[in-house]
Amino acid sequence: MDFKSVKWPDGKRIAIMLAFDIDGETLWMCRGKDHITNFSRGRYSTLQALPRILRMLEEEDVIATFFTPAWIAEQHPEVIREVSRLGHEIGYHGYLHEVFDTYEAENAHMEKAEAAMEKIIGKRPVGNRGPSGLVYDYSLKLWLERGEIYSSNWRDSDGPFIHEVDGKPVPLVELPKDSILDDTAY
Image (tube, rainbow, N blue to C red; front, top):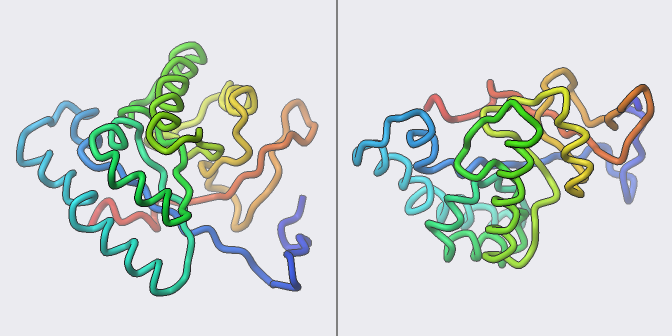
């Protein structure tokens, strides 16, 4: 599907997805750099930055998606509940921001992460931004089986598109992203 031919509701010309990754402490934990100083850097996101972002979004009347490792939600459930209560979406971003390269391992961790999110916010994520942005030949199949409706992982398009499996469209929309727009380095 050519994204330029998409007809948006109410005659709108464009749709924008504003998304944040609440990686917190997990970026250091999954890289073996679990020092107390690094943990404090990670906690900054939930203790300082996220409340400011939520205030800004509320002032501008904007709803966003927050891709969140489930471990972060377990450590800061009140913060994640508030994000959800304000109408923002919580998307899948791993359990501990880990990366797996087998269907079985990733499926097991997705199940663990989804169960944790359901316990905290009462629903499972329907969108996926893979930890570290890595996807595999089995990823689309896995996401479809788990009931996800969109991915934000591919980097080869300026706009959304419908994924295909074996040359046939499947009910999984891609909302491309690129790490060049990510503030992790800053």
